[in-house]
Length: 355
Image (tube, rainbow, N blue to C red; front, top):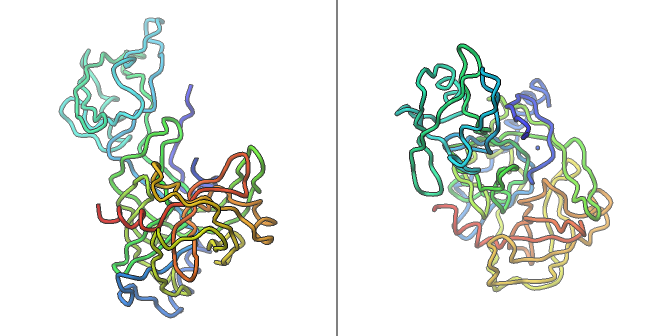
């Protein structure tokens, strides 16, 4: 049986695979306003403000995502699986009996008041919307169930990659997939939050490790909005630019053809401060079939190896810098060798920012 996931206001998580108190966060916001403001309007189209800072992420799905079906016991003591073969993992429920549904709460409220022997679910499957008829199971005198496991949000921690002159950001370098179905999540909206790294589980062979952070999901910690979740990263706009980019200098965009094997840097904040760490680019695949694996790199910096063991979950989105230009972002770690991983070309991230 799949484990239920509930939204929490205080979440301590390891990153996707892929997540301090309110008073502390409020004080932090007040202090950041005293710093000199960074204006994205001063950045030209040929420049990006590099990231490397950790961010808290919360996203709501576009409809209610189906994780699977289950067998339930009816009031008569018999076993039923009413939704089997009718809905599939990765489907999105967007309506019930002509009533639109946008989240789990709305769906559960409708199911709670079912009186008919048959319900019609409006389901989005890939790009097609279909209608599915299901007979709910009566489990008590006043309660019916459909036997469907569902989810309507995702939460986590990652690294922001860049900010454009239009206050638009790119982060992660890869999409956020559901942990149960591995499907890329369709989202309606999302929010960026302030976070801080509290602990790091070092990577080792067979265990990539991860960054642990604390995120308080309240309005005081909101940094911006998430509008898109794609295979090349998440995108949106930053409202509190000074909170994230106050000490960052705009940098030129490095094209794919300019990248060379050899020395480079990645920028991240694994010890609480944004720093550059030495890496070696070992392979460049300009025609890679996977959009976020065109660069292969190896961590060589002794300090980073001591702190993390290499690349850990949570570092996805860390900018890759070579010859003073931002050329890509870290996306994946090799499970059997935490010192090595993949990266995405920055051009690939930028190509999807306005789609």
